[in-house]
Image 1: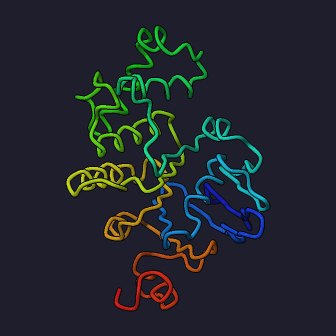
Image 2: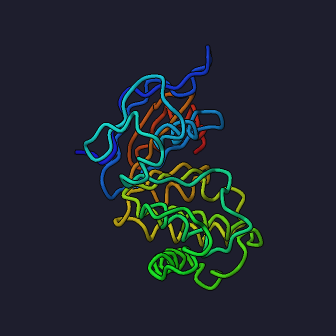
Image 3: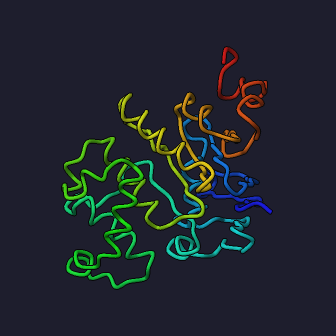
Length: 247
């Protein structure tokens, strides 16, 4: 049984259909990438899977349970977490406080943000472990708003990891990063393979083909192909619709 099963998922706004009868499965432990041109509906699909956006029709099953109608916090508690295309952090908080707050949310602790998070050693230990995983252990006390763009992407990944996800949804984690920053993030994401199931949206094709076990191609809201990197490169429909005939 797949960890994530998506059945005939649709999202529309009036006459505009953004995701159209999407059927997708993600196996436990794999890194599955979704690629497609701008406007294909990739971020909308991730938002539907995370619970940020309701679907017009279709079903989402996670670990065998129907989660179609569950809100985003309920999905996080079940082990489904996401990062965002646009960095979403608390800039006035320290790096450690950003991640400790995510641990606090996972544990169901009270949301008295300041004294409890600063004083609960267990929360901070888990947060520091997540920061170490993404290479930010030395930046724990820095104000999050002062980080470089690449470091903010690392922080967002640490926040997602701090929720202890079974499935991690990553929406363009390399967006806006420099070459060295992108390489660092690729190494971190690659290190998660086999430990956390990952569904990745990314425009950097070199990163996608280096990381992904399987790739699905979304065009105009519809999935047109799913397969290994080699199969996707060789698919004439994919080459014509997205990769280009010279790919």
